[in-house]
Length: 268
Image (cartoon, rainbow, N blue to C red; front, side, top):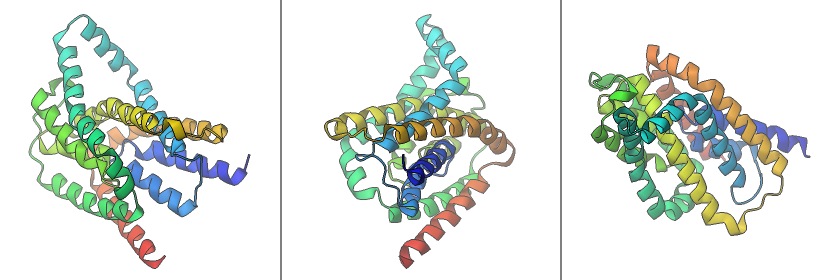
């Protein structure tokens, strides 16, 4: 196995895991990282699809107690569990519909470093504005999430189909606008990621199944493991940090990274 390819796969897997649930755009980071590293993994984006799955499963592992309790509550028709499950599914629907309708256009037209760089900067400015002007929260725990707010958060998630916007950033900031506290906004974003990202992964596999090439399965598996591990490690500290300090640091990071990327792209 090519050792250079191995360390690139490790690095990109770590980048995916660290950024997937932060408001900084994992897709944008992957596109920029692959551009900078000249990464040429398995064709047809199978590497990117599988490492994303690793990050999803990390959330399933970390929140397994809540997931199992909700599933059990739904089976027993308990109202809190039914309401929470309905909120997640309702929030998932807008992105599912738009994703199916616009999938080809998004992949072919928007997935490029320039779009990512601009989206990072604009998204950072939006986060700063929301942090400054967000109204006082009325939803302070996950169990207080109502269906109307969940649907509005799901509509916000559609914006994240532009690479560089950030799925977690769009949903968390959307939740903040609709008066959800920082920690429950982030946690609801995590749960919403499960059907959204699983759906996107399955759809990508379905659309590309006839041309998928699993050559280099060792590299793919390595990226998967690193994405899982990095996501599992970063979620707890992220929640503690935003609960105390907010999202200012992530906003300025986005602006700095996007500006740097625009300069480098202009110079190349």
